[in-house]
Length: 341
Image 1: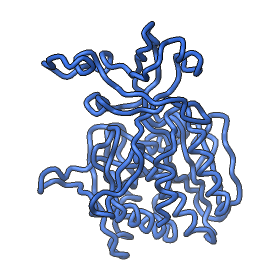
Image 2 (image 1 turned 90 degrees about the vertical axis):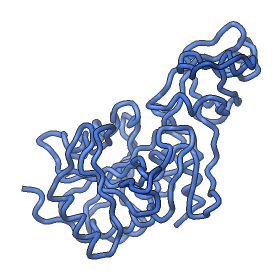
Image 3 (image 1 turned 90 degrees about the horizontal axis):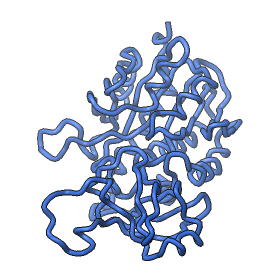
């Protein structure tokens, strides 16, 4: 597993609407393994491996949750709105990078009145009560071209923890999925199957990129590759870190295709790949938009469980990433034949 590439993807700044830096990294890698690469009008990176058989769309989103400046106070305080779902608790005290599409402009710290002045703290603040302190005045911020609409991203570098098989960093959602697709494309370089590897934009704000990409591609079946939350705080939790990839049977907005799911379970059993089954009533993935395209597309979701999802730093396991790549490889090599009627 190319850990250097994985960490590079995680560390890249790519909030919803500003995925350009992530896209450049992926495009450089993917051009080695596919026949055609295009960036569509919306910013999705579509990588086509020409071949025969049912047209498969694999989707992983490039964007990450973040913040966007909505007001600059006279004293230089930066008020912000959240891009995607971020737990307010995890923002307090975080270092953030204010970025454009080329570089980090400057850094700041998220704080609020009671924390800043060491006052008594009776309750947690709302996101609206937080601000970013850069140490700069409004005029100095303007000179640096920090304006309403500038993005701010939590500045947590990718790393391994005490157990070197466990990784932590920002944007595991869904740079893990992007990495899995790149590694999969590497393994399938000589395949004769028809595959579209699609790296989508703006998933965190409404699955928007997938909706436009699937209409263009018109696939016959689809798999979204994304992360999901662990449930392993208690021993009896169902979804655990390090216990293999996940297969989402249902989420808030979709029930995955039963025929494809049964085929995946069969392949996992045959190849002795651990597989965790997930049923949830919150959240959804790009598979929802693939499934609902045109006349309907049989679709499902294969994922990797992470801890601290939708926070400023998440935790994942290398074993789960490797096994997700392995599972997808065998699914594509042994495609379901009875799921497309």
